[in-house]
Image (tube, rainbow, N blue to C red):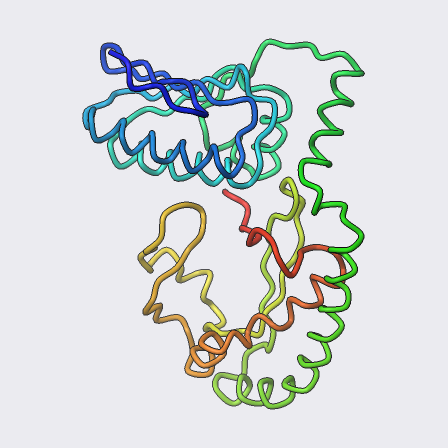
Length: 261
């Protein structure tokens, strides 16, 4: 049995409880959206699907959108008790998965390939020049100017916010967390603390209301009183202008995600 042909991804093939889906040459934003739609269709038609096999034999590039789509697919497979298999995974895709620790989460069959030095350099070149905004001097200049202005505003609001946080529970003013930047590069993101001091230890007790690698609960009981105000006004995000100034993140771009464990 075969699905209707899709414009970006090859039509999924189904037989005896196993579905095979071949991924495209580049697995980025547009392809990731279509991939999620196709996965929903697969599970609607075959709720008792035993195995979903993703063929990466032709895929030479994946970005954070593709990685996020894979994480959502894995969660859907877990909900349906379906085995998820990634096979013929090439070097660049494997590099992206390992940088985000997803190589420890997925069942992966690595492609049998021995790339030449020139081929490896081509992959690295593509890896670091995937989008013009990554190396755009104009965009970086805008980030620097915006960060300097933002840090000036942060200095103005720092004292009242610091006093309010200290008066509530006496804990630290800032909260730092490891996030993944371009192609999984790790850095520590900074915020004004909006949760109780042992928030990470209590995380497993809170229901995650969103799909994918992000975590969100509208009525999270770990948020402090001053924290709710900071989040509502987005003032808790102001220390991140320091991350922008250092070049670890940008004023406009994909939200940095925590590494998968």
